[in-house]
Image 1 (spheres, chains in turn red, cyan):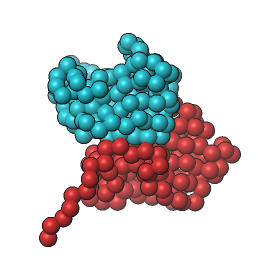
Image 2 (image 1 turned 90 degrees about the vertical axis):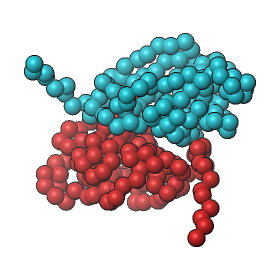
Image 3 (image 1 turned 45 degrees about the vertical axis):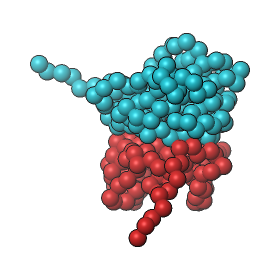
Amino acid sequence: MSEVPAPLRRFVSTLETEAQHLEKQVNQWYFKDGLGDSESLVFVRAKFTAGGSHPFHTHPEMDEIIYLLSGEMEQWVEREKRTLKPGDTAYIPRGVVHGCYNDSGADCEFLAILTPAKIAGPFSVDHAHEEPWRSLR
Amino acid sequence: MSEVPAPLRRFVSTLETEAQHLEKQVNQWYFKDGLGDSESLVFVRAKFTAGGSHPFHTHPEMDEIIYLLSGEMEQWVEREKRTLKPGDTAYIPRGVVHGCYNDSGADCEFLAILTPAKIAGPFSVDHAHEEPWRSLR
């Protein structure tokens, strides 16, 4: 039962990312559990086309920072809302309900960084269909 | 001995960052120990003018990801070197010697995200004047 260790992966270029295509959203994963050798950090660049969103949800075991790269995005952290512009950030402690909505009519791009990378339960839990979140916007 | 708790600081815009001016370098701090309410993540945007650098050093207690926003930067992780372009990343485990050098002749900008935010010892330790790092480039 010998296993060849994965090579160290200390540089990830934009061309080496793992792409994930969702509705009105493309994620480019740089580092996550099983991708790259970081046990502490998840790093993903996301693009929402017009109307794209990640509705109210939590990351039960991970703290998160969002950094807007381009465009505009409506960001909620619990009941607080801001329109993020390039260079703006939001910090979301683990277990706190938050949501991202692109109603700008144009693309937006952002980075999401989460810690830790290795967790026991699910990456995210949906709360969009529960009150008070369902009626909030 | 009552103490007023600091307000939650879940949004930090680019205008709300704390600026740090160094030689050929400006850091804009979004989140760090004592700034914002993240205990797990440090988040800073840095600009190097031509010739700016953060020579070989370690973060003894923190893992780090670097993300290049603009320009070009020579990034070392131990003895491995890459020229980062916009969208490229480097991952540096805690205690691993690394260095950033802007020899491009123009400005470059990057994000650095470190975890955890609360540590016992120094943020970084200089190794630029020790072998093999002193002779490496």
